[in-house]
Image (cartoon, rainbow, N blue to C red; front, side):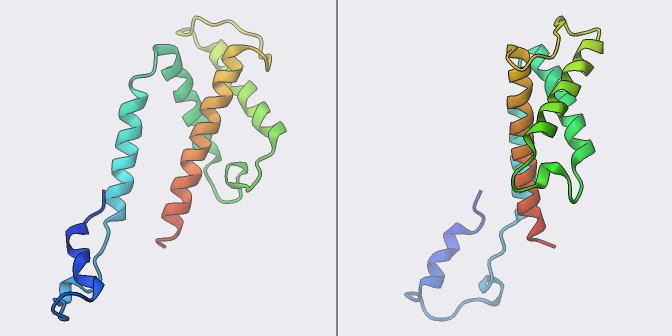
Length: 138
């Protein structure tokens, strides 16, 4: 989504030398780009299986709680122990959910725990990238 790419040839110095004022600083609409990334992510997450969508909801709720300045989520090297404790907490919340068909003791080698770790890692990565992109604007 590069807005105004057709006008960049005017900036290479081979044009007439005069640039209309409104074209001197072509503005990329970063807010629309960020919204498009978010919509695309949501569309793809709708394709998750039912149980994975439920896990994703719990992962997003936990990440919402952590999304503040100084959080483990935004550390350069997040603490692995706290990360695994958070995964166990999500797994326990799944056990309390009556819609889920899984009844698992939180063990790190269980495929459900590995799925939670992967989904939590992906969500943290997505939010860290969004944080870095948005932080530059303000």
